[in-house]
Amino acid sequence: MLTKNLLLGSLILTFALSSQAQSTKISQNCTFEGVPLYGKVQVVNSFPDFKVQVVNHFPDLKVKTVNSFPKSCGKWQFVNSFPDFKVQFVNSFPDFKIQFVQFNEGLK
Image 1 (cartoon, one colour):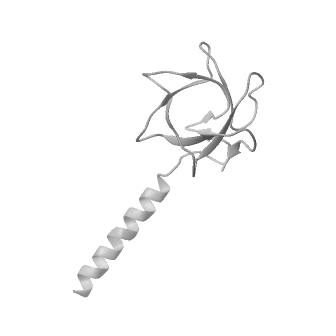
Image 2 (image 1 turned 45 degrees about the vertical axis):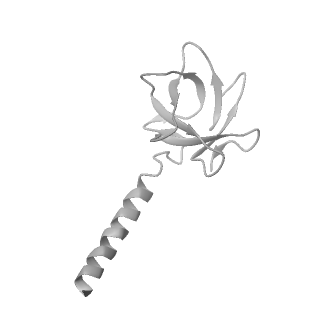
């Protein structure tokens, strides 16, 4: 019985640690897979660079939309051509989660 409890406990701990490690891959320098998360962004329905879920709470990145000079972490300028990266908005299984804000954009 004790062996089963230890095995179950270690499985739960392993799952918790692996899911926590996979919660976000955004680095402290505001990049995801080497791509800076600021700049000109194009929304697409297929072949995105990243799949993004918009949330109201607990985002991985807070995003402020701007009309020009998207030069710092979390500032996105939406464009129809020549993007720095492309995103697809999804409801499940995102690469990372964002929240649109007016102030204090950047990492959580």
